[in-house]
Image (tube, rainbow, N blue to C red):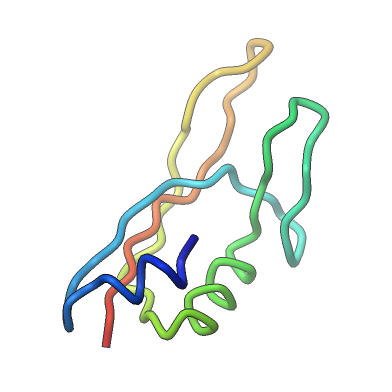
Length: 79
């Protein structure tokens, strides 16, 4: 997803998105059928796509089964 986005961004252009947060080192599919991503994986994916991390913040994305689902709110910038 990031590589095609990066290819279409103008210099200095930004892409922003949220992902469910995982405390591991990569990403994985959960029993809910959704993927979770670690902050390290987000940084690696940005680097691989040639994007710079502008910001990464934590937020509650939604509540599922009465529990808060933690997310990363990410903004990346093209070079």
